[in-house]
Image 1 (cartoon, rainbow, N blue to C red):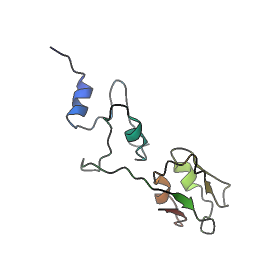
Image 2: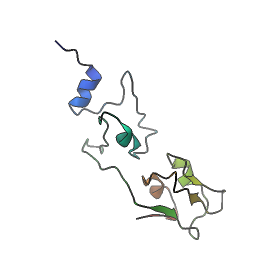
Image 3: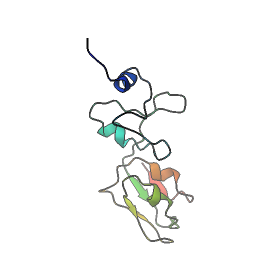
Length: 118
C-alpha cells in the first residue's frame, strides 16, 4: 500500500492548500501576480477567485508609465513583486522592461491611471 502525503492529496483533489509542511502562501501578502503558478515545477498551484473558481493569470505584452500623468506617488513601485519600477518621489517613475514580468499588479495601484498596458 502506497502512502500519500495528505497535503498532496488535498491538492490532487482540487482543494486549496495554503499551509503544508513545505509551502505556505500568506494570502495577506499575495498580489496574485501568478509567478508561483508559472514557476511551480509540478503544476499544483493555481489562482482562484473568492468562490474557488479558476482565475486566469494576468499577463500583458507591454506595461509602461506615462511620464506626463505620473505624480511620483510610489504606489506602483511599492507593490511591484519584482522591483521593476523605480523613481524619485514626486517625479515620474519608470519601468525597467528587463525586470518587468508584465503581471499588471501596478495597473490597479495608480491613482492617476498613469500606468498603461497592452
